[in-house]
Length: 285
Image (cartoon, rainbow, N blue to C red):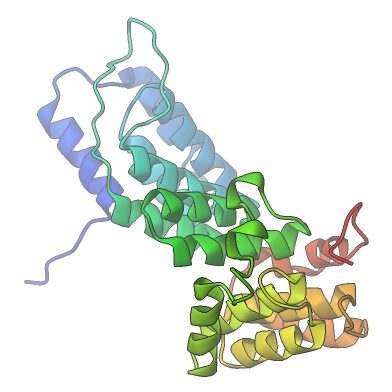
């Protein structure tokens, strides 16, 4: 007999129904939620998750998982992934405080699940998830990972967040390159594709290193040619924006965006990337 492994959210739902005589969500209301979410649409699954979450009902997790699994990837699917990150980071649902709502949390925090969900959201093109990952890793004491996601958010947004403390956080110390920058360079040269994207971001922005867009593009393309979605996307952005000494080339940019979009990176869809390469109100130039 072959054992069928149930999704974690579904396990929660089954256990809740088996162990609780008083459902967290009123039965009639839950039936309506399930009925309206049965069409398989991502927005329907998201709404179901949010409605269950109001009642502090762990079935919200199941419906966020359903929304996150819908293809093709869109901003809404990445919103669902980020919501899962938030839930697993805190072990809490965003619920109401009325007398008819059970206040005790039905979940426990799981940093591993939180990081995985935030990362999935970021790797499918959610710009806010980049910042959430940076914040998450900073709280976990992982400066290298925090810097990675701060840099990616900085490249996308044309500016660094206040919490990142960039560029000061990795500025040269006493005339010497910052240790985190030296580590990134060494790992990039050793073939680490994630570090190659990191090095490209440092060079493109001039954070921690002298600004050099041509070298930045080389590192992005090196990572992108090995299948790294951020290497592909940032190659497209840099070529499309044409800055830091890089000549604007929309045809080449479109090719890189197409590769990233093929990996479910929703920001690389044509309608979105064409807006992303428009001149911003502020740049590193």
